[in-house]
Image 1 (tube, rainbow, N blue to C red):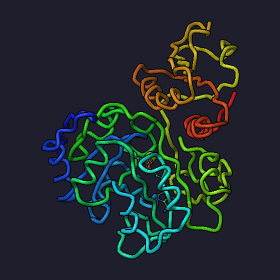
Image 2 (image 1 turned 180 degrees about the horizontal axis):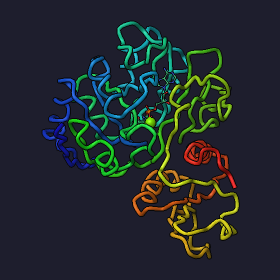
Image 3 (image 1 turned 90 degrees about the vertical axis):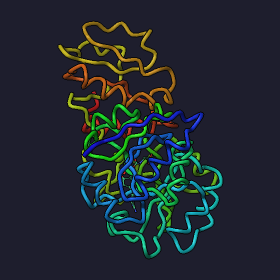
Length: 329
Ligand code: TXA
Ligand code: MG
């Protein structure tokens, strides 16, 4: 398949050019596009055949449902019969932004979007290109992260090109994703609001708006968020989460990369050191990028500083535990 790459400035959107991407969506094609979290691989949410092609392009297991993206909060009503009060509150505070809400679905949504579940996941991004693309397409856009299944999520168009060139119709280069990790997924379909995947919007942020929210960390038993059971965020190198990165010289061998904050204070030798910035927000924005870079330079081992489990650090640790297959040293 020919993949067309177009470049769009998120601060000065070329509507004519972006309309060509919307045409691809309208005729059932696949477009990779930037969002504030990570790049998504989009198709018309209401075109079941188009959505199936997302799974083929990514090599994604078909039992893993997708998030539908809307550009107007009122369009939530396209997916659910009634909107609960707490969903309205959350939407008014956090949309557009990195919060995905799961609700009981209404009829008419393709099974390929929901993987046959009786619930549906919806979010309204804050990214100018994502929202303009949805509006121009005239339909919600179902989109998982635009990576090959299993690899770190893409935060630049180059990552999408590396993974999906020749497998999708179009890739929109709109610069780097600002947040760098995927949205918080909150299940509002049951008795207790439950975080299925942590993200930039933290349990405390949600509690402030709707009161009690459950976050159990790693799910036990059958995962409710089907996607979280698969191998994820894995570079080819072996990843280790390191509690005391300053004193990790003993873990460094040939071909080791270190990803840490405040690298100026590190005195480690015989390794490549990647700068994850100063704050945990910097760390999140760079994590997937740096994991991919480690692969590009042929690293065999990656030592990543363990983030503190608070704020966005909760989400960082969640992703890192998957990248590292649980290895903490
Ligand atoms: O930030 C994001 O959420 C990005 C951008 C592109 O919006 N998208 C993203 O999609 O991360 P994806 O497919 O990589 O992750 C969606 C997660 C999966 O773990 C999936 O299992 C879960 O959401 N999910 C979707 N629908 C669900 C449902 N009805 N019930 C439970 N989990 C659901
Ligand atoms: Mg993903």
